[in-house]
Length: 308
Image 1 (cartoon, rainbow, N blue to C red):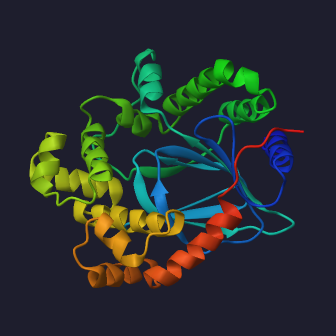
Image 2 (cartoon, helix red, strand yellow; image 1 turned 90 degrees about the vertical axis):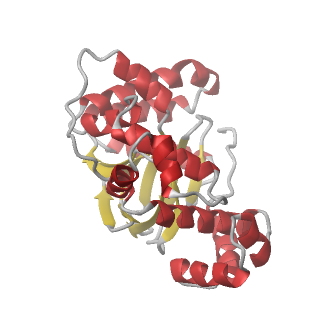
């Protein structure tokens, strides 16, 4: 089932100059990745998205959770999440190839409203990321998105309908109950996501659990329980990860020095920032920033070019 899809994705990569790394597309929120070697663990913020492996294997680690997924499996992430991803199977002969599709909650909600019945849901909050098989209808949708890249004028007309179809197959599939919680108003997940959104926007500020619980319209104890079940982290651990990842971005893409990055993300002490950064990433901030700058240049600095 993946041969035509893999061929189409490979053709697109070659049309963009070939090689490896992140290949953006003219479709907003749709990106392609290829790697010829296993990669060291990379900590990043995973947006709500669908990550499909066409060849090779990858794993994701967040909090106490570790998820592995390989050829024609997908990772579904329902909350913007600080996590560590790693390509674990890739070579020159059989590279890692994957596609990334960002979720639009408004589209999910619109599709959900048109279903005859809501997907069956569990009462308990579970992790905000899970692995599933890629079935034929979903693979067909992704193939049509890739082929659409050859006709840029058709993208604004046709891409939204294909994305809606992807939402439909996800919501009507075996994990539809988990996915629909993201779109259902006043579900526990949707309430926690409100607080997560505030954390993403105001991570440099001092935020108490009671404030976040009030935003989520939950008691502090209930909020803490659902937040931990969803993200496998406490709110304070989550905020610390956001701060450190933003500090890394500032040093890598905006050439901020260590002290500037520390103060911009809310640290009062550059030395405390350096200690926590080193514990999280396993290397001192300045050294890590230099490494990340090289990786960014090699793997993630492409722009979309017109196909020949």
